[in-house]
Image 1 (cartoon, rainbow, N blue to C red):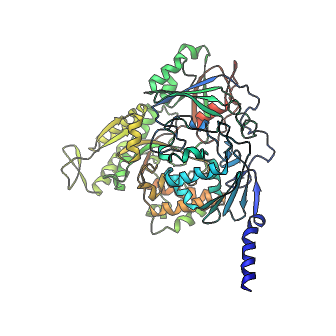
Image 2: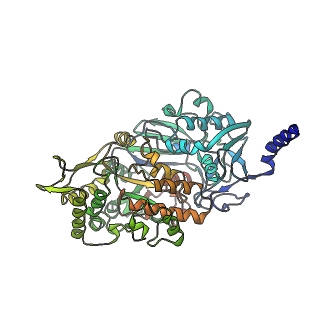
Image 3: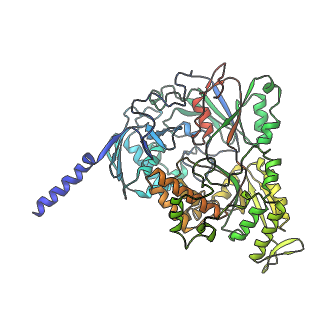
Length: 602
């Protein structure tokens, strides 16, 4: 009897992939993917656009490696052009993917494992095939020494099995891992023969063997990097590639500062310039080439979530005191900044998911109230009573805000002595540094500095080069920074890297504020495991509201439009997908083309 039981058990194991799985050519985090199995190309591309020509873009700062995975160094701009992934994400859906290196994949019905079947035509630039061995080595390398977010996500991978040369299976520790399947599908596949020589921390200090539509042709660290289109690119006829990769050459020029890059654009040595300073956009595009129409100016609305603002490093005093963070939030004169710096062209959106329906509404829904009530002993009375709102939304007089700020500081044991703010137990006045990478942020920081002087706080504003800034960011060596997060329309595992407690103490993570909150951690776990779009939205609203209530961040007015200037020699699709994730340089380099005439955005 025991023999037959064991035999039945073994048969069930081997039958499970057949009886409880589905072969797919596309996948969406929620619901059905937009494009059918026989789609010809994505809607936001122009499939018959001509090939050829060059596009030259400006980058501020420098670079020191070609690693496609963000490590503790500065990766060359455009490296995403050189690598392919198992699946390709569409830009006009929140989170859906279609065939790339993997032509199909089989997902178990309980989403506890996935088998990717590789396209036998997929190959590296040296014509060697991309095999399951390359895929396995890539993920083993990430699990061992990859970026924090990836290592954390891949802890859910129980084991990886190479079934055949072109089939690989990922088995997860728990079911319901659709999001992890998507995440695995997004990541660049590296050659096993390179990974066997060095791990990811030392990978690609020179251009390595790749497999994407472009390859590195020329470069000089911190000066430029040039990519050449691969003429016999293996995926050029796939529906997910049609309408992409038109330029023969894509070149990124590096500049020490913003003004030098802009002057190069005016001189015609840079083809396209994405303007980040609204004041500069309004005042400095009246040069002769623009007046004559040789340079085109485009103001393009978008629906991407952006977060721009001052970030407190709560690992350090006095920012580990929420009253101090509240006081400094009140001190920022948003109305003055809006008038003098942003020219009333931007919106003040305090949300961490602003400009989308992911942002917490003014009044929580019944589902969000129910969710928040489960944390009633761990959240503030304001949140429990559904009365929380940030001071900057109350539009009070700035003098009144400063008075409230003084009250909060006194409540936390601070006092004014000889016009300087002191902790009662300290002989040193309160002062801190605002660390910046981009000179265009200096005016914002200096304006904030003047407001803080009215509270008796001395502030030092320091602008450093990209390498030093990244080094200090990686080890959390700063008091305050200005940061701009690029959010997804389908927030998921990356949120752990931004707000999770473990990330707060992990060097190289993006939890710049040092947030450690058990409620946020629990919401992040719920967010990642959630399969319902409605419940995902409720959790995101609650997460947004909790993050706002922690005063980790002072929101600055945010743009809901892109300002782009380019020399009039390009064609481009009629519209930009408004829901596209914010890799705008990808949009220009991958879907535009060189032409004598150009179309207007609709």
